[in-house]
Image (cartoon, rainbow, N blue to C red; front, side, top):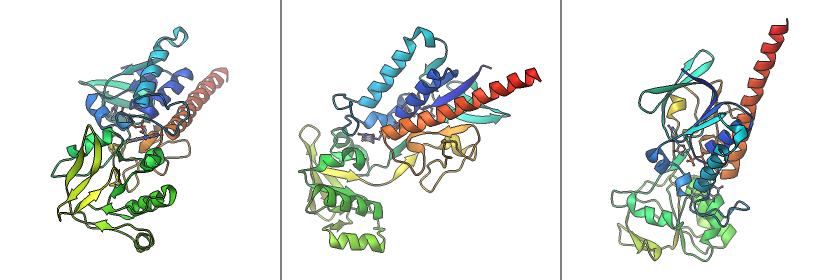
Length: 328
Ligand SMILES: Cc1cc2nc3c(=O)[nH]c(=O)nc-3n(C[C@H](O)[C@H](O)[C@H](O)COP(=O)(O)OP(=O)(O)OC[C@H]3O[C@@H](n4cnc5c(N)ncnc54)[C@H](O)[C@@H]3O)c2cc1C
């Protein structure tokens, strides 16, 4: 079985940067990009436009675009030939084998790697409306249902806004939107869930105007062509809202780590060291799956560079020690 220096798992922004950095470091690297199913569940697919990164304003689907052009650029570099391979395949499990990892992928195939960089990401929990998560998707695609306030909070300016959520995070987000963008009122829709607000959130909600509606959402008002207009609730209330922020938590794609008994936090994100190594030595985690960091493209890139450079440092140190051993 072939052994490579680095296996990168995940073809989003974090995985692409980890692959690029490893290849530029001249470490033999395989990138597993996932397949159609994992891509659809990945966040990269949902990012239509990026406003908060210089140089990305004119791109449509900038993460998918930059990943594609980066892989094409690497493929076109004569001097980098044979260092990296990118495959559209899913890693199904990882085993430890001495000082390396065995990655099982595709239809019964396996690869040995000295180091692994895991960049499988997370997904935002979607609101169920009438028993399905489908009704919100057209408005998520239009950027009117918002999942990342650091990315898209400013897009609520001049709009009626609601927050879908039932805990203190939802209340904090609503308060931030009122303070930052001068919204007069931001209703919180728990969509049938029992409210779980802390005492300090309740204070925040009484200082600012945040009515809490606990009835389930039964209908989304608007059309995929003309845009979001609001929601109808089970108690008959109509909530006018041309933008909504979804704050229902995340699903962490951490199985490859947890199957090795790697440590995760309460939300399922990976606990890592300063250089993004998980509690499994040699297995690094970067991107949205990292606990306690911003979930942004630029942080994913920075984490990926740190992890790939740390791996390269260890490979170089090992090579140097082997040379030293030969001399003594
Ligand atoms: C609607 C929306 C808008 C956003 N806008 C912005 C913005 O404007 N600016 C900004 O900085 N950030 C934005 N973000 C956040 C940004 O999308 C994420 O921070 C970034 O995509 C994280 O990248 P990632 O590589 O960690 O994860 P992802 O992009 O989710 O990529 C995960 C990858 O892993 C692959 N994968 C999963 N499992 C496997 C497996 N077993 N084997 C192989 N591959 C696998 C998937 O196919 C996918 O390619 C936005 C997020 C959302 C949801």
